[in-house]
Amino acid sequence: MKLATTTSRSRSTRNTATTRIVVLLVVLLMPLPARLAFGQPSSASSPVSGGDISTMTARATTAGIAAADLNDLLVRGRTAGLSDEQLERFVNTLTGLAQDGLPLKPMLDRMRQGLVKKASPERIDFAVTKLDRRLRESGRLVDAAFPDIDAGHPPKSPAAGNPLPTAFEARRRLIDQTAFALDQGVPPTALTTTLTEFAAGPTPTDRLISTRAPLLALTSLTAEGLPPDQGLAFVRELHAGGARGPALEDLGFGVAQAIKQGANPMEIQKEIKSALDRGIPPGQILRAIRDRARGGKNPNGPPPGIDPPGGRRDRGGPPTLDDPGRRGRRGGRGQGTGGGGRGGR
Image (cartoon, rainbow, N blue to C red; front, top):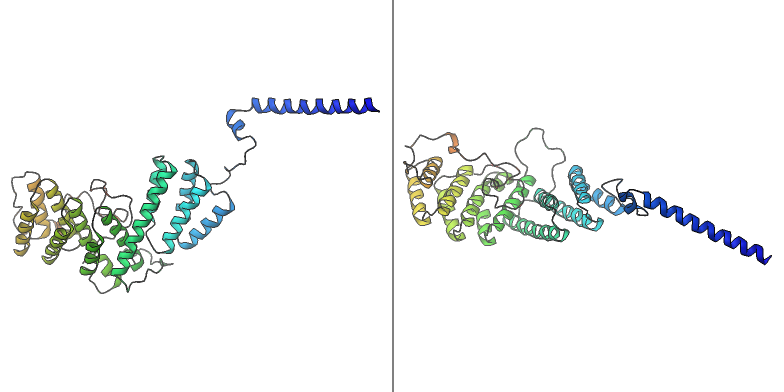
Protein backbone atom coordinates (compact mmCIF):
# COMPACT_ATOMS: atom_id res chain seq x y z
CA MET A 1 0.00 0.00 0.00
CA LYS A 2 2.82 2.33 0.88
CA LEU A 3 4.61 1.48 -2.36
CA ALA A 4 1.47 2.19 -4.42
CA THR A 5 1.04 5.61 -2.83
CA THR A 6 4.68 6.51 -3.48
CA THR A 7 4.37 5.42 -7.12
CA SER A 8 1.20 7.51 -7.55
CA ARG A 9 2.89 10.58 -6.14
CA SER A 10 5.85 10.07 -8.46
CA ARG A 11 3.60 9.89 -11.51
CA SER A 12 1.75 13.07 -10.42
CA THR A 13 5.06 14.91 -9.98
CA ARG A 14 6.28 13.78 -13.43
CA ASN A 15 2.99 14.87 -15.03
CA THR A 16 3.17 18.32 -13.41
CA ALA A 17 6.76 18.75 -14.52
CA THR A 18 5.89 17.66 -18.05
CA THR A 19 3.00 20.13 -18.16
CA ARG A 20 5.27 22.97 -17.04
CA ILE A 21 7.85 22.10 -19.69
CA VAL A 22 5.18 22.07 -22.41
CA VAL A 23 3.81 25.46 -21.30
CA LEU A 24 7.34 26.89 -21.20
CA LEU A 25 8.07 25.62 -24.71
CA VAL A 26 4.80 27.11 -26.03
CA VAL A 27 5.62 30.50 -24.51
CA LEU A 28 9.19 30.45 -25.84
CA LEU A 29 7.94 29.65 -29.33
CA MET A 30 5.47 32.54 -29.29
CA PRO A 31 6.36 35.78 -31.18
CA LEU A 32 7.83 38.42 -28.90
CA PRO A 33 4.71 40.68 -28.76
CA ALA A 34 2.56 37.69 -27.79
CA ARG A 35 5.10 36.68 -25.16
CA LEU A 36 5.01 40.17 -23.63
CA ALA A 37 1.22 40.11 -23.55
CA PHE A 38 1.00 36.55 -22.14
CA GLY A 39 -1.02 36.57 -18.95
CA GLN A 40 -1.77 40.31 -19.20
CA PRO A 41 -5.33 41.69 -19.45
CA SER A 42 -6.18 42.94 -22.92
CA SER A 43 -7.07 46.64 -23.36
CA ALA A 44 -6.97 46.83 -27.15
CA SER A 45 -10.62 46.02 -27.73
CA SER A 46 -11.69 49.67 -27.49
CA PRO A 47 -10.06 53.10 -27.07
CA VAL A 48 -12.35 53.58 -24.11
CA SER A 49 -11.64 50.73 -21.71
CA GLY A 50 -12.85 50.44 -18.17
CA GLY A 51 -16.14 51.35 -16.59
CA ASP A 52 -14.76 54.54 -15.03
CA ILE A 53 -13.69 56.07 -18.34
CA SER A 54 -16.94 55.06 -20.00
CA THR A 55 -18.87 56.80 -17.23
CA MET A 56 -16.71 59.89 -17.51
CA THR A 57 -17.05 60.12 -21.28
CA ALA A 58 -20.84 59.84 -20.95
CA ARG A 59 -20.79 62.71 -18.46
CA ALA A 60 -18.52 64.70 -20.78
CA THR A 61 -20.81 64.33 -23.79
CA THR A 62 -23.76 65.34 -21.62
CA ALA A 63 -21.81 68.49 -20.69
CA GLY A 64 -21.55 69.36 -24.38
CA ILE A 65 -18.24 67.88 -25.57
CA ALA A 66 -18.48 66.31 -29.01
CA ALA A 67 -18.19 62.52 -28.91
CA ALA A 68 -15.87 62.61 -31.95
CA ASP A 69 -13.45 64.92 -30.11
CA LEU A 70 -13.46 62.68 -27.05
CA ASN A 71 -12.90 59.52 -29.04
CA ASP A 72 -10.07 61.14 -31.02
CA LEU A 73 -8.40 62.27 -27.82
CA LEU A 74 -8.72 58.86 -26.18
CA VAL A 75 -7.36 57.04 -29.23
CA ARG A 76 -4.38 59.41 -29.37
CA GLY A 77 -3.83 58.98 -25.64
CA ARG A 78 -3.92 55.20 -25.85
CA THR A 79 -1.53 55.25 -28.78
CA ALA A 80 0.84 57.47 -26.76
CA GLY A 81 0.69 55.01 -23.86
CA LEU A 82 -1.23 57.12 -21.36
CA SER A 83 -2.78 55.36 -18.41
CA ASP A 84 -6.47 55.36 -17.53
CA GLU A 85 -5.68 57.78 -14.71
CA GLN A 86 -4.05 60.25 -17.11
CA LEU A 87 -6.91 59.98 -19.58
CA GLU A 88 -9.32 60.50 -16.69
CA ARG A 89 -7.64 63.82 -15.88
CA PHE A 90 -7.95 64.90 -19.52
CA VAL A 91 -11.66 64.08 -19.67
CA ASN A 92 -12.41 65.66 -16.29
CA THR A 93 -10.60 68.87 -17.27
CA LEU A 94 -12.61 69.16 -20.49
CA THR A 95 -15.85 68.37 -18.67
CA GLY A 96 -15.18 71.08 -16.11
CA LEU A 97 -14.56 73.66 -18.83
CA ALA A 98 -17.72 72.64 -20.68
CA GLN A 99 -19.85 72.81 -17.54
CA ASP A 100 -18.58 76.34 -16.84
CA GLY A 101 -19.19 77.55 -20.39
CA LEU A 102 -15.47 78.01 -21.11
CA PRO A 103 -13.69 77.42 -24.45
CA LEU A 104 -12.93 73.80 -25.26
CA LYS A 105 -10.93 74.01 -28.47
CA PRO A 106 -7.81 75.62 -26.96
CA MET A 107 -7.63 72.81 -24.42
CA LEU A 108 -8.27 70.06 -26.98
CA ASP A 109 -5.56 71.53 -29.18
CA ARG A 110 -3.12 71.74 -26.28
CA MET A 111 -3.70 68.10 -25.36
CA ARG A 112 -3.35 66.92 -28.95
CA GLN A 113 -0.23 69.01 -29.40
CA GLY A 114 1.44 67.36 -26.42
CA LEU A 115 0.51 63.89 -27.66
CA VAL A 116 1.69 64.56 -31.23
CA LYS A 117 5.01 65.89 -29.92
CA LYS A 118 5.30 62.82 -27.68
CA ALA A 119 5.80 64.97 -24.62
CA SER A 120 5.96 63.24 -21.27
CA PRO A 121 2.68 62.90 -19.35
CA GLU A 122 4.11 65.20 -16.68
CA ARG A 123 4.78 67.98 -19.21
CA ILE A 124 1.34 67.59 -20.75
CA ASP A 125 -0.28 67.73 -17.31
CA PHE A 126 1.66 70.91 -16.51
CA ALA A 127 0.61 72.60 -19.77
CA VAL A 128 -3.01 71.51 -19.36
CA THR A 129 -3.17 72.77 -15.77
CA LYS A 130 -1.64 76.12 -16.76
CA LEU A 131 -4.09 76.60 -19.63
CA ASP A 132 -7.04 75.59 -17.46
CA ARG A 133 -6.12 78.28 -14.92
CA ARG A 134 -5.63 80.87 -17.65
CA LEU A 135 -9.00 80.14 -19.27
CA ARG A 136 -10.73 80.35 -15.91
CA GLU A 137 -9.01 83.65 -15.11
CA SER A 138 -10.10 84.98 -18.51
CA GLY A 139 -13.64 83.76 -17.90
CA ARG A 140 -13.79 85.69 -14.63
CA LEU A 141 -12.57 88.87 -16.36
CA VAL A 142 -15.10 88.61 -19.17
CA ASP A 143 -18.00 87.76 -16.86
CA ALA A 144 -17.10 90.65 -14.55
CA ALA A 145 -17.10 93.03 -17.53
CA PHE A 146 -20.45 91.68 -18.77
CA PRO A 147 -22.35 90.82 -15.58
CA ASP A 148 -25.72 90.85 -17.33
CA ILE A 149 -24.70 88.18 -19.86
CA ASP A 150 -25.35 84.69 -18.51
CA ALA A 151 -22.79 82.02 -19.36
CA GLY A 152 -25.77 79.90 -20.34
CA HIS A 153 -25.50 76.80 -22.48
CA PRO A 154 -24.94 76.23 -26.18
CA PRO A 155 -28.16 76.33 -28.22
CA LYS A 156 -29.56 72.85 -28.79
CA SER A 157 -30.91 73.68 -32.24
CA PRO A 158 -28.96 76.56 -33.82
CA ALA A 159 -30.46 78.04 -36.96
CA ALA A 160 -29.11 76.29 -40.03
CA GLY A 161 -26.71 78.43 -42.02
CA ASN A 162 -26.78 81.27 -39.47
CA PRO A 163 -23.30 82.90 -39.62
CA LEU A 164 -23.89 85.09 -36.57
CA PRO A 165 -22.65 83.73 -33.24
CA THR A 166 -24.95 83.46 -30.27
CA ALA A 167 -24.09 85.27 -27.05
CA PHE A 168 -22.86 81.93 -25.68
CA GLU A 169 -20.45 81.47 -28.60
CA ALA A 170 -19.35 85.12 -28.60
CA ARG A 171 -18.60 84.92 -24.89
CA ARG A 172 -16.47 81.79 -25.28
CA ARG A 173 -14.53 83.34 -28.16
CA LEU A 174 -13.89 86.50 -26.17
CA ILE A 175 -12.64 84.41 -23.24
CA ASP A 176 -10.21 82.66 -25.58
CA GLN A 177 -8.99 86.01 -26.94
CA THR A 178 -8.62 87.35 -23.40
CA ALA A 179 -6.50 84.33 -22.48
CA PHE A 180 -4.33 85.06 -25.53
CA ALA A 181 -3.92 88.66 -24.34
CA LEU A 182 -2.87 87.49 -20.87
CA ASP A 183 -0.30 85.20 -22.48
CA GLN A 184 1.15 88.19 -24.34
CA GLY A 185 1.56 90.23 -21.17
CA VAL A 186 -1.57 92.41 -21.08
CA PRO A 187 -2.37 92.90 -17.37
CA PRO A 188 -5.87 92.12 -16.06
CA THR A 189 -6.56 95.78 -15.25
CA ALA A 190 -5.95 96.85 -18.86
CA LEU A 191 -8.11 93.99 -20.08
CA THR A 192 -10.97 94.98 -17.80
CA THR A 193 -10.76 98.57 -19.04
CA THR A 194 -10.77 97.43 -22.67
CA LEU A 195 -13.69 95.03 -22.22
CA THR A 196 -15.85 97.62 -20.49
CA GLU A 197 -14.86 100.80 -22.34
CA PHE A 198 -15.28 99.61 -25.92
CA ALA A 199 -18.39 97.46 -25.53
CA ALA A 200 -21.16 98.78 -27.75
CA GLY A 201 -24.23 97.57 -29.59
CA PRO A 202 -27.92 96.88 -29.07
CA THR A 203 -27.61 93.18 -28.21
CA PRO A 204 -25.42 91.17 -25.80
CA THR A 205 -23.77 89.46 -28.78
CA ASP A 206 -22.97 92.83 -30.38
CA ARG A 207 -21.44 94.10 -27.17
CA LEU A 208 -19.25 91.06 -26.77
CA ILE A 209 -18.04 91.13 -30.38
CA SER A 210 -17.40 94.89 -30.32
CA THR A 211 -14.51 94.44 -27.88
CA ARG A 212 -12.65 91.97 -30.09
CA ALA A 213 -10.75 94.46 -32.29
CA PRO A 214 -9.67 96.82 -29.46
CA LEU A 215 -8.56 93.79 -27.44
CA LEU A 216 -6.48 92.34 -30.28
CA ALA A 217 -4.99 95.73 -31.15
CA LEU A 218 -3.91 96.20 -27.53
CA THR A 219 -2.51 92.66 -27.48
CA SER A 220 -0.40 93.29 -30.60
CA LEU A 221 1.05 96.50 -29.19
CA THR A 222 1.80 94.97 -25.79
CA ALA A 223 3.43 91.92 -27.36
CA GLU A 224 5.90 94.19 -29.17
CA GLY A 225 6.94 95.96 -25.98
CA LEU A 226 4.66 99.00 -25.76
CA PRO A 227 3.61 99.52 -22.12
CA PRO A 228 -0.05 98.58 -21.64
CA ASP A 229 -1.11 102.09 -20.58
CA GLN A 230 0.45 103.59 -23.73
CA GLY A 231 -1.03 100.82 -25.83
CA LEU A 232 -4.49 101.46 -24.39
CA ALA A 233 -4.14 105.21 -25.04
CA PHE A 234 -3.12 104.41 -28.62
CA VAL A 235 -6.15 102.13 -29.10
CA ARG A 236 -8.40 104.91 -27.76
CA GLU A 237 -7.04 107.33 -30.34
CA LEU A 238 -7.48 104.84 -33.18
CA HIS A 239 -11.02 104.11 -32.05
CA ALA A 240 -11.87 107.80 -31.64
CA GLY A 241 -10.53 108.41 -35.14
CA GLY A 242 -13.09 106.03 -36.60
CA ALA A 243 -11.14 102.75 -36.79
CA ARG A 244 -13.46 99.86 -36.06
CA GLY A 245 -13.48 96.09 -36.40
CA PRO A 246 -10.84 94.61 -38.74
CA ALA A 247 -9.46 98.08 -39.57
CA LEU A 248 -8.68 98.73 -35.91
CA GLU A 249 -7.25 95.28 -35.45
CA ASP A 250 -5.01 95.68 -38.50
CA LEU A 251 -3.81 99.12 -37.49
CA GLY A 252 -2.82 97.78 -34.08
CA PHE A 253 -0.90 94.95 -35.69
CA GLY A 254 0.68 97.21 -38.32
CA VAL A 255 1.87 99.70 -35.70
CA ALA A 256 3.21 96.84 -33.57
CA GLN A 257 5.25 95.56 -36.52
CA ALA A 258 6.54 99.06 -37.23
CA ILE A 259 7.65 99.37 -33.59
CA LYS A 260 9.32 95.98 -33.87
CA GLN A 261 11.29 97.25 -36.86
CA GLY A 262 12.48 100.35 -35.02
CA ALA A 263 9.77 103.00 -35.43
CA ASN A 264 9.36 105.51 -32.60
CA PRO A 265 5.99 104.80 -30.93
CA MET A 266 5.32 108.44 -30.03
CA GLU A 267 6.09 109.70 -33.53
CA ILE A 268 4.00 107.09 -35.29
CA GLN A 269 1.14 107.74 -32.87
CA LYS A 270 1.18 111.47 -33.73
CA GLU A 271 1.29 110.73 -37.45
CA ILE A 272 -1.65 108.34 -37.28
CA LYS A 273 -3.70 110.75 -35.19
CA SER A 274 -3.00 113.54 -37.69
CA ALA A 275 -3.98 111.30 -40.60
CA LEU A 276 -7.22 110.24 -38.91
CA ASP A 277 -8.06 113.86 -38.10
CA ARG A 278 -7.63 114.67 -41.80
CA GLY A 279 -10.10 111.92 -42.69
CA ILE A 280 -7.62 109.51 -44.28
CA PRO A 281 -9.13 105.99 -44.19
CA PRO A 282 -7.52 103.52 -41.73
CA GLY A 283 -6.72 101.08 -44.55
CA GLN A 284 -4.72 103.75 -46.36
CA ILE A 285 -2.85 104.65 -43.17
CA LEU A 286 -1.99 101.01 -42.69
CA ARG A 287 -0.56 100.75 -46.21
CA ALA A 288 1.55 103.81 -45.60
CA ILE A 289 2.93 102.23 -42.42
CA ARG A 290 3.76 99.05 -44.30
CA ASP A 291 5.36 100.92 -47.20
CA ARG A 292 7.63 102.80 -44.85
CA ALA A 293 8.49 99.65 -42.92
CA ARG A 294 9.53 98.03 -46.21
CA GLY A 295 11.58 101.04 -47.19
CA GLY A 296 9.15 101.95 -49.97
CA LYS A 297 9.40 105.09 -52.09
CA ASN A 298 5.97 106.32 -51.06
CA PRO A 299 6.09 106.66 -47.25
CA ASN A 300 2.97 108.82 -47.16
CA GLY A 301 0.80 106.21 -48.86
CA PRO A 302 -1.42 106.69 -51.91
CA PRO A 303 -3.68 109.72 -52.30
CA PRO A 304 -6.94 109.73 -50.33
CA GLY A 305 -9.64 107.63 -51.94
CA ILE A 306 -7.24 105.08 -53.46
CA ASP A 307 -8.09 102.25 -51.17
CA PRO A 308 -9.37 98.68 -51.71
CA PRO A 309 -12.76 97.88 -50.15
CA GLY A 310 -12.31 97.77 -46.40
CA GLY A 311 -8.61 98.55 -46.68
CA ARG A 312 -7.77 94.85 -46.42
CA ARG A 313 -4.85 94.12 -48.72
CA ASP A 314 -1.82 91.88 -48.22
CA ARG A 315 -3.06 90.71 -44.87
CA GLY A 316 -2.18 87.07 -45.17
CA GLY A 317 -5.80 85.95 -45.13
CA PRO A 318 -8.75 86.82 -42.94
CA PRO A 319 -9.10 85.67 -39.35
CA THR A 320 -10.75 82.34 -38.86
CA LEU A 321 -12.93 80.96 -36.10
CA ASP A 322 -10.02 78.72 -35.10
CA ASP A 323 -7.40 81.47 -35.01
CA PRO A 324 -8.24 84.47 -32.83
CA GLY A 325 -6.04 87.38 -33.82
CA ARG A 326 -4.72 85.33 -36.77
CA ARG A 327 -2.10 83.86 -34.42
CA GLY A 328 -0.54 81.77 -37.13
CA ARG A 329 0.13 84.93 -39.17
CA ARG A 330 1.67 86.60 -36.15
CA GLY A 331 4.64 84.36 -35.80
CA GLY A 332 2.89 81.70 -33.75
CA ARG A 333 3.11 83.66 -30.52
CA GLY A 334 -0.26 82.44 -29.36
CA GLN A 335 -0.49 79.13 -27.54
CA GLY A 336 -3.37 76.98 -28.57
CA THR A 337 -6.30 78.12 -30.64
CA GLY A 338 -9.90 78.85 -30.17
CA GLY A 339 -12.86 80.64 -31.56
CA GLY A 340 -12.58 84.23 -32.61
CA GLY A 341 -15.57 85.99 -34.06
CA ARG A 342 -14.83 88.62 -36.70
CA GLY A 343 -16.07 92.12 -36.60
CA GLY A 344 -16.51 94.73 -33.94
CA ARG A 345 -18.27 98.00 -33.58
